[in-house]
Image 1 (spheres, rainbow, N blue to C red):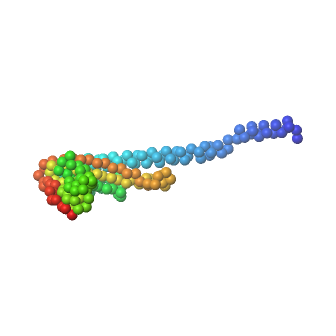
Image 2: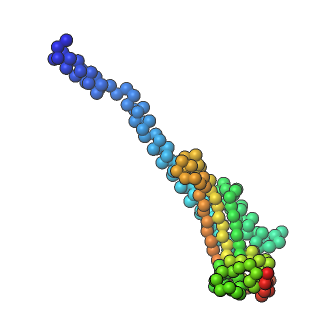
Length: 211
């Protein structure tokens, strides 16, 4: 077979290959399908996160109103109990029933939020050491770096609420390939002063402990 004949055969094969479209659609779909699925699930994931966060913000807004007014339905012992149940129900309405943490602390003023309980720095190292005298502001019989007392407080007290949700990813199997965490943390914090609605106000303790 001559060289010219061989070239003709190769040319014919190339022409036939160019005209043959069998399997082209399947190949294109195989290349684009993973990107389409990832985009779709990613959009759903973002939408779900925004939905839960919106519910979280709404729960906090209503919870602060409850704390400020001290107005709770009959059957609840404390404002704190009602707020916790309200928040949990609000988050449950968007499909989240686990991983919810609710914290409420009460202070006598905004300026004391996050402050440590006062103590006598005997050795001058600017750090509380066991045995040094301290004022047990929150009456829990232990020195605390945050003097806030647990609860929603009473009239004219300042209440700080922290709500945190560890939301599992829908695509946790895929996310785990890029991150060790299978959840995303959503949290919000607010601080309000309760109105003088006639309840019993929380008062900081002046008890000094030296042990």
